[in-house]
Length: 157
Image 1 (spheres, rainbow, N blue to C red):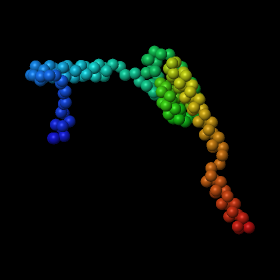
Image 2: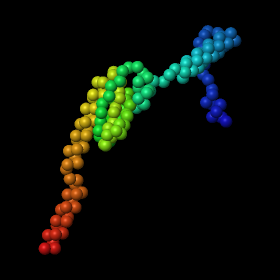
Image 3: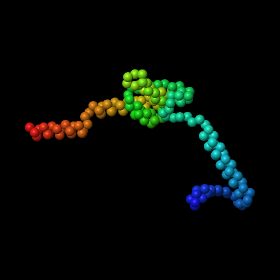
Image 4: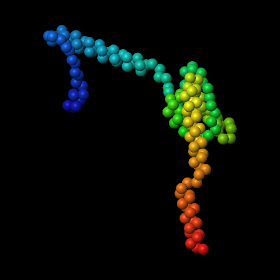
């Protein structure tokens, strides 16, 4: 109960030479007007339509009337691209095209985000190339297993 009362306390600082009842009434009315204005401002901001950012549906993207473009990706690991696109602040929508045997992904984005998407796509392709070169090399564990089998064969002979 005490904490609730402490959380609702208000500090009002009024500077003046002589503190009167009228001055106190004016200070309280000014504060109440300020609170009412803040409440109306908050309500107006809530009523305003929220513009979505990041991943969204194609319908939301088209509804923003900023022109859209698209890129086609055949790689099934689309999650990595989504992480990079969020990093660059790109508004985009992903649509899966199932008409082909390996499904393709169409990434729609705003026309104004073209430069940011180019940078994000460059980083995505660099990551993919790096991952492809890593998979070509055998893992350390596989090397150790191979060498241990070779030592076992040598001992048996």
